[in-house]
Length: 450
Image 1 (cartoon, rainbow, N blue to C red):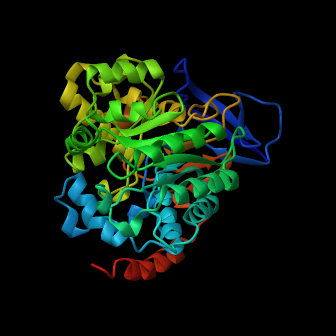
Image 2: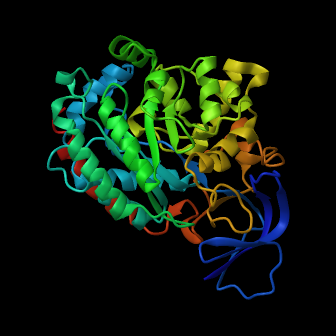
Image 3: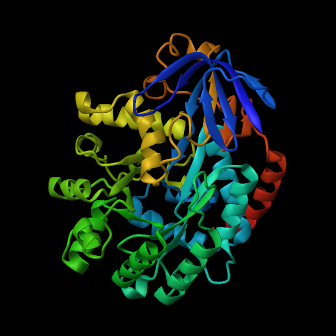
């Protein structure tokens, strides 16, 4: 299928040269971008983009999609992380394949409507008898048409072992490692333009044992898959690892083999200078979740210090119940503002934040084929119309738009792997009314314990 985006008003490439193209064509074929500019071929399909700005697809590098069904619950709104988790584990123990399928559909649908074309999800709650939850997630992604990296997350430290989660949501290390290896073999596709990849992801130092971290790293490196965990999110975590292991969180996790270009941490708020230097030296990467960090009162990441050191940073919405949305456009605006408030002139500008959500996030996920609009990259992109009253005087600077002004509407067009997935703000591949009906029925069961 040869697709032509005709006479695009503006293309913001987010490439290494920060090129911006005007009044030109963009050609897509076989999942990739084959040409920016004129091409002497007849397209199979064509879209008039003469009043549109086209951007690379946004890439979400940390989420908990199952939490979409525990958003905006009144009883947990004032809690910080540890108390928030304890309160919600009693609900999450009721997860099954249907819950995970529907919540993944709903969460990724919102992401995609607002320009996200790749989602990494950190799923770590596997109640006994809950079924094949990763298969449910990949099925949801396949129906929507979104590119997905899923994790075989894990917890083996329950309350009786000195951890945070209850017994009902943890597994033994042997169970986890066997299932992790099975999941890699079943789901991981390392090919260029791959639509699905698998990551191994013990949840956190207060819910996963040292042995599980070590063996997960060994397994991940044997198969060449990435590794992910929460780290340095709160001062409570720091107090926990200092009391239990006699080490700060980074020193503890580094001692278990969890640094390097195949490792990315979620949050990374409470690092000191020495730790940031070590992260930069080892090529370790960070998923930045500003809205979640603000909502749970966790703190503000030292983003300017990370960027100064060349640490790869990507942008993420984090779990829906700690945000409570799945909108990376909103996340870009929030990231720009919180860092402007905190760091002043040292804060990244709006365009730098856009690059965190595109090429930066691609680097965090180890995807050299994503993150920018240039020939040879995957055809993942979104388009918004310039002619709108809420964009008056805003679109003359399309690079900084999402940080300086914000954009609050669904996209006009979204393409993933060269296929149209959103048109005029509406999902192309999903009956949203049916999704709502099924989800409302499942929510009655899932939240019945409240």
